[in-house]
Image: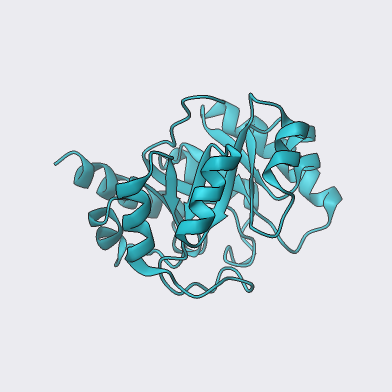
Length: 214
C-alpha cells in the first residue's frame, strides 16, 4: 500500500487483561465512538477460534465507523477477518514473507526499538513502524526496556516513514510525547481499563488534536 499515512490521534489496541473483564466488543465500540480511526486487535491469551470470531466481529464494527482494522501477529486471522493489515514484532514472521501472503494492498506495521530496526523496516517495505516503548509498560510481559525520546526524535527527524509512539503512555504524560513529534499515539490500559472508556477516549483524542492544531 503506497503513500500510507497513519490517522492522527489515538491508535487503539485491545487487551482483555487491561480491560478488566469488560466486554471486548462493547469497549471497542466506545473507542470508535471516541474518535479512534485505527484499531489493532491484540489478544495474547486467547485461542485461535476466539481470535477469529472476535476479529470478524471487529471488522464489521470498524467498517461501521470507517476505521482501519489491524490484527496483531496472526496473518491467518487477518485474512479470515478481511482486516486492513497486520502488526508484527521483531521475532514474528519476517516482513518479506508477510508481504507475500498479504499482497501489496494490505498494511504491514512493525514494532521497532532502535535506529537499526527502523532502517531495516524501511528497507523491507513496511507501511509504518511502532516506536517504543517510550515509558515503562505493564501491558506486555516480553517488552524491552523503555527507549525514551531519543529514538522517537531520531525517527521523527531522520525518516519519512509513518510511526506510532507506544508504551506506557497515559493522559498525564502524553503532552511530552506530542512535544517530541508524535502525531499517532497508542494507548491501551489508559483507555480499555477505564470505567468510562468512551469519555476518556474523547478527552485524550481532543487533547491530541488541540495540541497539533496550535
